[in-house]
Length: 241
Image (spheres, one colour):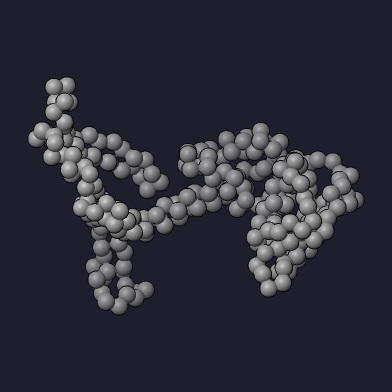
């Protein structure tokens, strides 16, 4: 972002995208930027008092996009170790990959990461909120994926005719009501999924009648799950068992 070239006329998909770009620039250059004007049709970002730097963007007519209209990129101020416009959601998106890889990452480690990466000082309270925001985002994505597991099963059957797909869920007592209501205790919890592709079925016919079981544990935000694949042994491999 240090080498980012601001150009008048650049179009941004939304106001939030422009603000994120301004924030990334402020973090990477360690400038105390602030929003001198911020409403539904215009945004003006300026530097600290006495510095002539400013950026002005406005919403385009009859469109959802925003455009950079004018700017002054000259800085007369010094760099700072604190960026006031940095907020929790932006920092959470920045830390998302690290938190997804290690949900138990310590707050102190994230504080040190910000110090090493940007040479900035961030408070432990902001980092704690950012980590929680990242976790909420990650868990939300997992929940959305579970909601589409039925579509996944349908696509498996559509693209692999002759395959076997069995989805097991736990339904609430009120789930079968024809008219769902918010007062009812409605839920549907995933339990297990069995998949046997048609190509695997046909290959099993060429194997000896020996079934091998192998298992592994999958670690997810919802806990540890046990995966149990089943296979039959090809005659060429039977002598190795």
